[in-house]
Length: 317
Image (cartoon, rainbow, N blue to C red; front, side):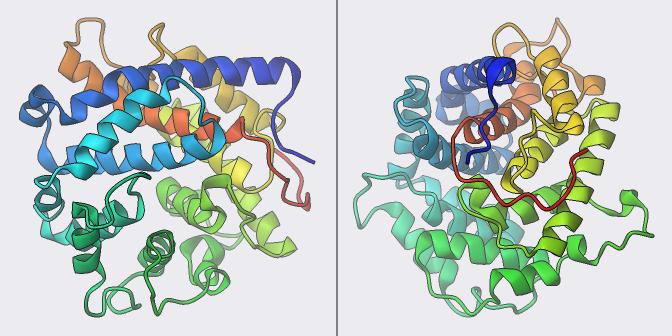
């Protein structure tokens, strides 16, 4: 049994995905060309490249023959082979070790065994970084996820225990939904489920709990016209074994994103309230569009990938 949408829903998701992937493939090179290096703030640019590598990992697993993937692969190949890039990872000290770990974990295939990413990874995992010390439960979960991708030994708790320590698990029915942070919720799900490529490993009660929160948050974000967060929540629904095109909240989210998508494939802002204006220049348009368009590309490329479903144990909203 799979969770891939069918019929008209498949066509709508395919169109949304094609536009977002096309835009990313055509424009991602700006992150590492001379004008991008001059015009974009350093730390957000470094983070955007790591996000691009995460998209690339999912895209190559789900649809490796897609011609729009070539632009992404070329950009990442240049960046990961550059001996100058690792120093940029440490420009902001509070993110340095996590960025180095992600850079090592998300290295594209085909790099030299002694490439710059290996030295950055070795620096990241030195000492007690891969332990619970001074880390929130969420950061422990993220660190474990990337440590495992990188093949680095660690001393972090297993995934079920890290879930039980999370804010998401602790959110009881009598507490307001506003206490939950959408990014914290969705990335907790992503790390448990490997962005949709494995079962999240939750028991029936926990799965029902998380599905409820994710669907209610989806309803809220759709009502508010929050494109970026809606895209993340659609992927989280899929990670939990739901078909977003078949849940009322997910179907509404897909409609919201399809209506927001510009003719060139971009999602032109994080929300309807901060849509890039018609008079926005190329740099402003890129900065407004990149995050949400990448999220939609990631969500839909995974959603269109057929895989075994998580057993259905909870109703859909």
